Image 1 (cartoon, rainbow, N blue to C red):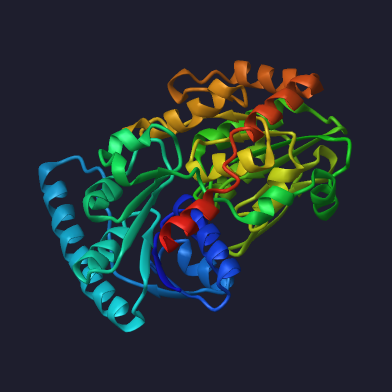
Image 2 (image 1 turned 180 degrees about the vertical axis):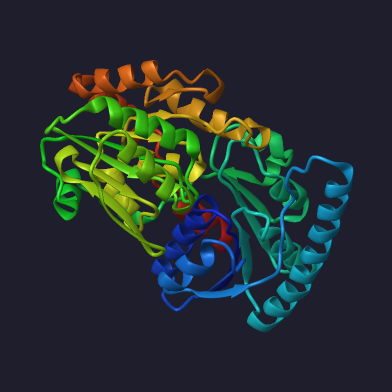
Length: 383
């Protein structure tokens, strides 16, 4: 099978594509797979590292602007960029001759799938979130199949006859992780209570603020370890704030290795985490946003969480992503507009001293996992 993936911008769009690619290669080792993305996106680094071919195209997404003139200028730039991206996508597709094109989101997938539709290549869309993004909604009419990560999204797309609930695909390694082995890899004591706070591949200021507040309150507790993924753009700022709270940190600030540690407080701060699976596996509790990828991974591992959805996500999709797990009993949902640091820290302390509650939440979270998502997608495309 020859397959092109159009995706990128964030890990939430990229890693589900990698999970599907992994399944295709497992079933058909001779398959040829090509990723098309932006040279500025995460995909330009991660895809080659994972052993897949990658080509970049010019593309740009719409963002909020204050004035009519700014909006007009941005719209013109977006149009020009995407036309160039469409032309290059057509050239790449003609050269590669794929059997299928799969889009998993991000504005870069729009010109790729549009080019596929123009060239009459079977196109498929996977929507990770409870509320579809703009690009996927625009492309849905001509897609052969629409795969969705959350139940209920079928009715939003408006094409129930070709919409298939699959759940969100996660790389197979997440389903076989062992907490003890992951802690050995990271050098974390087996009996520590471990909190992992992270804001996704780009970082999130609200999650960072919560983590710093918790770090400041937790004191010199030898039985606690805090893992803190800041996002590269927030790393220096977060290190400085921790130092202001009296922490002595040994830090490395190279662009490809942003790490800081405080031995006495069992604190580890990272700008970007490559082995995210072991961090999630090592944790007793996660503090995170409600991106579809983050939630799919914590469900696969079965980890309780305090989830703070971003307040301005398209269609408020992060809220609905988080609500599905919260309703099942696997997480505490905290709305950003109602954020109360005292309440969050009290929830952490409650779970730190109540192992039974942690276990119950973890089991509820695990029950939400879609272990066969990539299998379903592969079978649907083959059929």
